[in-house]
Length: 302
Image (tube, rainbow, N blue to C red; front, side, top):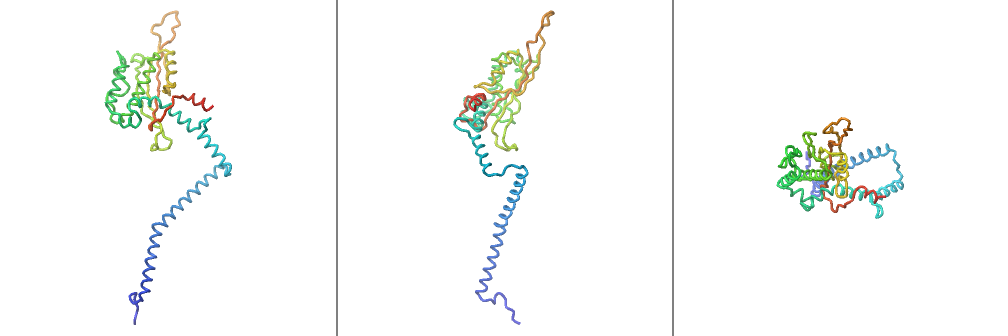
């Protein structure tokens, strides 16, 4: 009995069958490579949208389009401000510029800009600055001869050199303000104090540590001895138009008088001030940092 095979089909039929097979294979391939992933992505987006919709409905926030548009415009006006009243963005820029102006001045004087400072600072720069600060402030039997600021004459290998230089500049500034006010670095006899750079703190707007850093803080712990008048003069010099070294920690202890005299009031005149002050740096570099203080910003806003 004769049984036809595909070879016995007429040529037009064989061509049509082959074309249909190729078309089906192309459709299956397109579905697997294009349509199916797109379908999964749309399903994921739809599920995410439905989840956000449920969350939004649970908050019971208004859903009036006109009302929300009005609130959006008010928020943008508050953010961007106007020529007469600077917005939050401008106030934030000026505040950060004021806070970082102290270290920015050191950077401009020695490295022209922040990028040159980060990539151009060397261990020789660190050693030179270390020796200069030691020669200026560690005199006589100062405790800085033995326990300086927790950092040796060589920059630590585990820390970038530019960070150690920023710490040295912060220490130098604090020592300068303390000397001008009359405070003295505490000696071993009256407190075993020293001045030491604490670990750097990085600030980011994201919840993860991998987010872009917009501000660096260099805290320094120190213990000084002196009178209350000298300490008040010191604190007054920490936040001016030319310096921003806010005090974020303070402990005051009194020292007994050198001699207790009978019939005298024997008032305490010398104190130990253990404090922490910080300097700040913009890792991106400030373009034109204005010499303004938070009080100036408040006056402009009013």
